[in-house]
Image 1 (cartoon, helix red, strand yellow):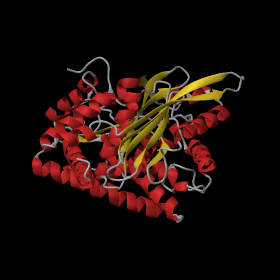
Image 2 (cartoon, rainbow, N blue to C red; image 1 turned 90 degrees about the vertical axis):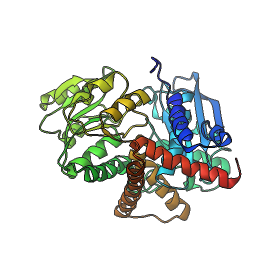
Image 3 (cartoon, rainbow, N blue to C red; image 1 turned 180 degrees about the horizontal axis):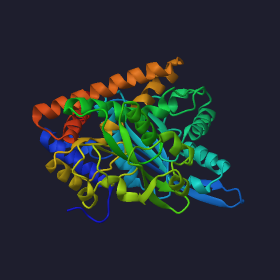
Amino acid sequence: METSVYNPYHVAQSQFDKIAASLELDEGICQILRQPMREYQFTIPIRMDNGAVKVFNGFRVQHNDARGPAKGGIRFHPMETLDTVRALAMWMTWKCSVVNIPLGGGKGGIICDPHHLSLREQEQICRGWVRQIAKNIGPVCDVPAPDVMTNGQHMLWMLDEYETIHGGRYPGVITGKPVGMGGSLGRTEATGYGVIYVLREALKELGISHTSTASIQGFGNVARYAAELFIQMGGTVISIACWDQADKTAYTYRKKEGINLDQLCSISDRFGGIDKNRARDLGYEVLAGGAWIEQDVDILLPAALENQINRETVKNISKTVKIIAEGANGPTTPEADEVLKQRKIFVIPDFLANAGGVTCSYFEQVQSNTNYFWEKEEVFSKLDTKMTSAFASVYDLACQKKLYMRDAAYTIAINRVAQAVRQRGWA
């Protein structure tokens, strides 16, 4: 039964348990892999602009580093929880494994809302987070990156604080940095483009035209660049759903003949919110936030939040939908997955579909450590190769074993990490 309270960590563990049982993993390996190896919780006292001291709570979870240094973003969110960070760290382990890059899984977070913080206050929070964890991250043990409501500037403040503490230059300690300061060309587009690279391969395998239609949830970097490349490929995006910061409500913006991406970008804010009144003036229908999932399209692309396709919302998916490409982390609950299996909707699971971001972060780490940087087209070419190869491996196993795509992806990813654990002699 799906409970009323969604816990992403419990979902991540249940997904692991299912595959571990099918792989008949040893109990010791199961115990190692179903929980984080290390967790850090700490307080970050900050003197605010008004002179008062406010204490923020920070986290860093390192799920597993058997295949390489932990890797994962740092998110700012007012509702952040340790269980969310644990789940995301676990998913990062599988994500790095499924695309076969030599990294493990980690994740970080700070309970805060940057909408209500000055840049100075945000900088102090970033530096405070690093001061608390500086001994436990580094180029060869744990490499953070941006995530929800963090960006290259936040990463640069963190890098500067780390280098100040350790007395040297360590550009490989953090990825997602600005270009020119150790960042990689193509990183901004990488996650969204990666979604479309694997979607392109799925369309080929299923014999579906590239001139298909899609509905997307989200309007951040993942959704925007996925929409951009999908449209370039010949597809049509008929609706975009996103949060409106003005009235704290989500809306779906629909234009049946297809959205104009540049137009919507011109009326959006830096957090991915769209001005609904200006959207109406431009001829968009403004629908309820959940309407994105009800559209009569070929493809659904959840690229915003977890728990969006669940026991209730899965009932609203149109009969026209053939593919779901999960740009977000954990957008589908296990109960909804069962319905999607029954309906034979082809799902490209999150930790495969959105692995373009961490793959490009790996490219940035390599470039920073060698102090040699690639041109954007080389980055995209390497990214396409990695994503295409990963999709092919998962799809081939799914066909051979008659597995659901999510199960096939987990089987490959968990197997690789379990093998590394065995080879290291940990179990």
